[in-house]
Length: 291
Image (cartoon, rainbow, N blue to C red; front, side):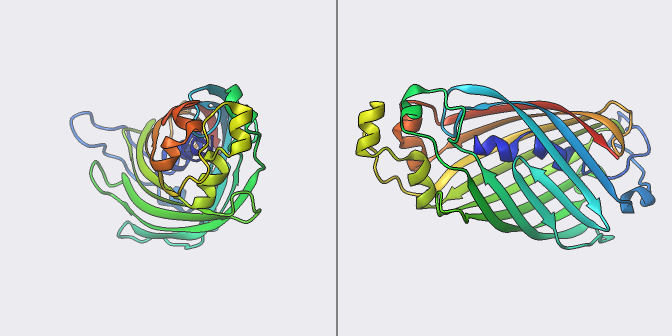
């Protein structure tokens, strides 16, 4: 479930509502001709959203559950903040470069609920639930506005690193990501993201191992010491439509579709290969409001 909490509807907020102020409908014969309202770019803003997600019941599951999702993002005095699932990040670099190139850097705090509840499969449920992990770290990256379709599309590359501070998995997750988003017109914004996740041995052993006692309880074969490494790669499509007619304010509808493929021992674990699946699908829809 962790993956959807980082690449879900909430990522839609981070891409779909992050575009500049739009002042004119697109000309269908060419790239969108969109004007900037400079005052709108500099003003403080906040977006709040909520909806429902359709997600695996645990990371590696082939059973799906419906969960509520919510998000907040915004800018206060030039500092951007956003939630991606149960992860909060703050861009500590207050910049707006006229060239469109900006540095991304700041702290990250996340809550990991993987295998803490909603476990549908009886064999995996017999292995027992895990405690909630609190993960703390940071991210760094670079973004460029005005890349392909117009002066207001955006391409960014970032890497985040978080480490468990609660002793649950006592390990780390490293996530490189590339994101692209573009306004199609004054009402519509689309985005695409590709990422990978690299996790440590402790993460693999906490969430994907089956010890002898667990094997007896669940009927799954022993898989005592899975190794960390590349955990998964994923791709995400994001869509945002302004019901108010203007992406920079008012009521908006957003959606996300995502696919992830587990790798290495994360895929070979009987928790995935027998009780679940390495293929992970995610979807979410929701409503947001930008003030």
